[in-house]
Amino acid sequence: MEQKMLAVHGGEQTKTKSFHRWPYCDEKELANIKEVLDEKSWWRVNGRKIEEFETKFAKIHGVKYCLGVSNGTHALEIALQTLGIGRGDEVIVPAFTFISTASAVIYCNAEPVLADVKPDTFCMDPESFQKAITSKTKAVIPVHMAGYPCDMEEICRIAHEHGIKVIEDAAHAHGGEWKQRKIGSFGDMAAFSFQNGKIMTCGEGGALITNKQDLYDKAYLIHGVGRPREDTVYEHKVLGSNNRMNEFQAAVLLAQMERLNSFNWIREQNARKLDGLLKEIEGIIPQAPAPVGTVDTHYMYMFYYDKNCFGQLDREDFVKYMNAEGIPCFIAYPVISDTQFFQQKQFGKRIKISRKYGEGDLKNARRIAREVVWLPHYTLLGDDADIVEIVTAILKIKGNC
Ligand SMILES: *Cc1c(COP(=O)(O)O)cnc(C)c1O
Image (cartoon, rainbow, N blue to C red; front, top):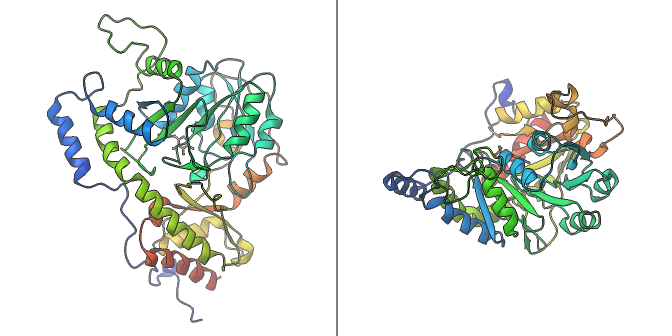
């Protein structure tokens, strides 16, 4: 094969047209925002968009209640607070996740205890979860990593056996399914994020869903400085911050939600095509395909990158080369206990961490953090040519190593 000069060295870029725009919007968002502007009620107290959004978002996830909130991190914090998690409690979280899954626990003055993940699914390993349980364990937060649904039967079974609450971190998994049942409907509560890069977005935003009215009612109070719905006399029933969603966020989300299923479907088709093509490339191993009857939302397309098959080219350089070829991609999250914040115990007076996580622990999470590269979801929203160009760029880099 003729060797082409890499774009990073001044050669021609592989990507010939742009990927799908993200965030994506059309006249629907605009019309909804205009309605809010004209309403002259831009908050939830006498607006209508947030309630409409909550009703629909709960419905598509097959649950009774949804509470729109300020962002996904706050959604996790409110869920923990609602379930009464606090000082002296332990909450088990996967070692491989975005920081908020663990930091939300610390914000509630509880200790996050790290469980390892599975090497193929990148989701919490139920066995490792079980091993991490102590008499102080009050909750577990499985993360549907990159959209791959966690084994919720097994996680819930273990949790119920030990009287542990389950909070699903569904920040990557809007509209996802585990064996024909909606993500977010397994746990006591589930938290979603609508941050700019997520598969449904309003810039910043979040939601909690649950089937339990008492949890919904309590979360509602907490998210609005402890104030009941119809209150006009400043009666604050519980301690809470202000984590309310506003009407503009809901206006955008209502439009985004209409495209969710079709976008999820397009990404699934393209992910399967990409899996098929990458199978031929030595040194690239994608996250496992989800079982039949399951909806993987593909928030990220993740794969192991083995530099031994790329002439010892470091993963960071591979990412740089890919970016130069016009393919956006990134390195995976660090393991939670390897972040500076965790290493230096920057927790203020909130918690003292008793555990140490050595090199031999969290083996799978460490390997993923060290070797995985991911493509953002909008790279899977285009046509066949987009998929082929991703593969072409990888082969071009490989050919130059
Ligand atoms: C994005 C994300 C969050 C936090 O959501 P924000 O809306 O950004 O606060 C929580 N957990 C995971 C796994 C995430 O990826």
